[in-house]
Figure 1 (cartoon, helix red, strand yellow):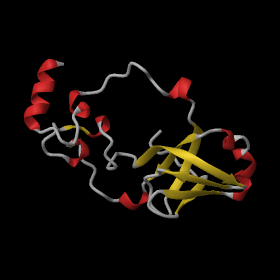
Figure 2: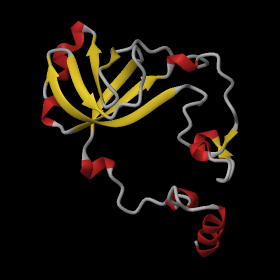
Figure 3: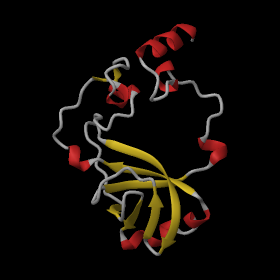
Figure 4: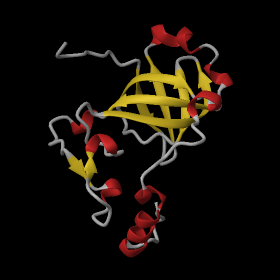
Length: 152
């Protein structure tokens, strides 16, 4: 299988810096029944504005050249082989086929591929392990990063 084709379930309408609406196809309105009982949802979307961009094999996390180069699939870079975005957002309200959310890092007009409810008992992994550089704060410099790396 060389190609997979998705039909968007809806599109993003940015309201302001913090809030957005996801407007679903009208025929999917009933597919949202019950989602308003969740405080947060995953939004899976297609980063259409990056079509045609050169996709690097390695990147510096957070675009910080002081952090090590890692494989793009080991990062949260938006430049990915399939340009798929994933964000957990706060669900503010549902009105018919529209979800109002907070914290969505997608652009106006972004095609939404799917939403799924966030379930803390399933989606939060208490003993997850991450690389040392992710445990550095913005104030840490390269020396502090190297010291933390040696300790781990």
